[in-house]
Length: 177
Image (cartoon, rainbow, N blue to C red; front, side):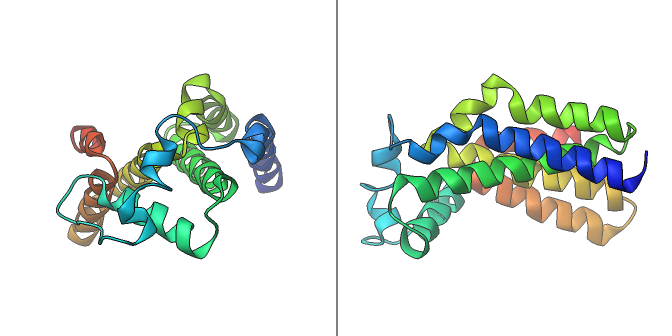
């Protein structure tokens, strides 16, 4: 398949995903979103983020959005959607290792549009899952690309550490690598 057709397919799947998640533009904070973001003193900046605690990277992400973009739910939802799209592109890049372009796009579309992903995108408090997924997928992709070099393995390990700092369950990527 030509590069142009591959890029067109990639753009089409990403656009379809953005359309599927369009309702998050008007979504409010739901369930534990208030506690995780707007009422969380670590996010608002009244207390420091404790890096010795679980999910400190997620709290830092919320703080950055809260202070530099907007305190409104729209900004947090758009960041979640952007992270989901990034994870989808990483799934596509990994799938290209074993598949040709069109089957890899189907794998990416299944990942991006599967209903199970809705919670991670629609709930602001689920940013930890998206960050962990992005870092774990990036580590796996790095490992498959540069596993013959010590520096590549070291980089993959550092990225795994970031994944675990976003959400502890990301450690499952280690046996897969």
